[in-house]
Amino acid sequence: APHLSGLIEQESSAITDQRWIELLTRHESLSQWEPQIPSTLQAELRDYQRAGFTWMVRHAEAGAGACLADDMGLGKTLQTLALLLYRAPLGAALVVAPTSVCGNWVQEAQRFSPTLDLHWLCVGGKNQLADLGPNSLVILSYTLFQQETEMISNHHWATCVLDEAQAIKNPGTKRSQAAMKIRADFRLLTTGTPIENHLGELWNLFRFINPGLLGSLDTFTEKFSHPIERHGDVEAREQLRRLIQPFILRRTKSQVLAELPQRTEVMLQLEATSEEQAMYEAVRLEALENTTLPGDEQPNRIKVLAGIMKLRRACCHGALILPDRPWISTKITALMEILEELKESGHRALVFSQFVDYLSLIRQSLEEHRITYQYLDGSTPSAERAKRVKSFQEGTDDIFLISLKAGGVGLNLTAADYVIHMDPWWNPAVEDQASDRAHRMGQTRPVTVYRLIIKDSIEEKIVALHERKRNLADSLLEGAGETTTLSTEELISLLQNQPCKGL
Figure 1 (cartoon, rainbow, N blue to C red):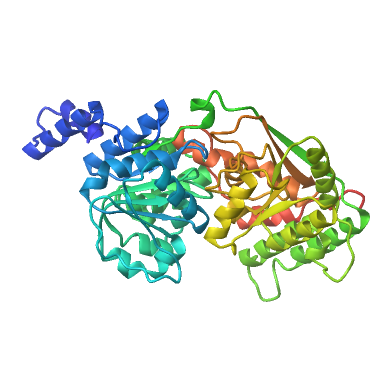
Figure 2: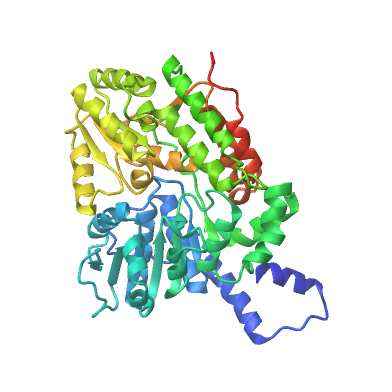
């Protein structure tokens, strides 16, 4: 409306009706309106959090959906709880979050908004939505949400929040389809990574909060995705940025937390053993050979990705490729040396890997070196997650061993001041979220982030791609940089790298 009003004012013959005038008047009044923070909120909001609360309430009053895309560690949950308290008299609210985060939502709701009538729905429980009304808050996981789509969609919600909203980024999934069936007066997304891989993900998030704003997927692909991702079209990128900018609020830690301790990034390039190098090269050649099999006209993207996955695992530990042979792992050897030194110096660390079977091998080594640890992966029950986090925060263990996807979001682990990534993930934003488990509000010590990389391997190329990926969200959210994706040919080029040094 504000953009159109400027155009209409320039056209003397334009005719508008009373609804249009009312819309502009309402927009103007809301932009100046300062809602009161609920007195029942048991927390003092920082200035930027107060601004986030005001921004969300204004969007709710205007009837527009919104996306709170602050960096990890800036208190999106607290800001959202303030909003939920404000809107509590209007009816029941729904929060859907990853399983690993639901426990944190419950704890923070009990702590900061105790007047809300809390309902935590669990997988396998006798879940029902009876007797919900004003002040009711329902929390459930995406897994249960998918199973109970009919029950959730049959209820009309005053407010619906999808936390870690990148969970619905793929429009073809059942999870996304279930989300689109939700009936709510105000829809809010919270995510530190509104774009992880490509612009189609952004389209789907906006289909949830403001359906129709970005057109159909085909139109969006033709008008924005292809011009921006394939050709770097600056005009198309700027046009898209102007469309989404009013509905996304993004603040980085460097902008709003000047008091946050320093964070240092260190990449350790490790030389593989001769046995590891030979195994790696054999895997690389096999993967390259399988990209195009007899009868295939074009390289098969699925086969290429499978080959890359195997090659990445080969960088981690020989036992992940040839489990029946004894292996001396360069990475685990280096990890144990680092952890021994940290332990002697009184430091504690989070250790992340995307491969659960790799974490099992690391656990064995920790036990051999008598290094105490907590452990978390996707199979850890919610109640047990909370118990292990509490135990680590209270100082009972030296290390917290965590799978990247299961523990990279929603955890407060400020008892650690070192973070170690055992293998690089495609998107650096996912790694950054994991590192932010330690580097967040409440951290009082400088944080050091280690990345263990095998020299002359595919891992070096993935790290080289990180800067390209880092600009994916910033190009739209901050209006600078480029947005690109990897083609099948580019993926194959990763397999065509020079073999490990010395081969």
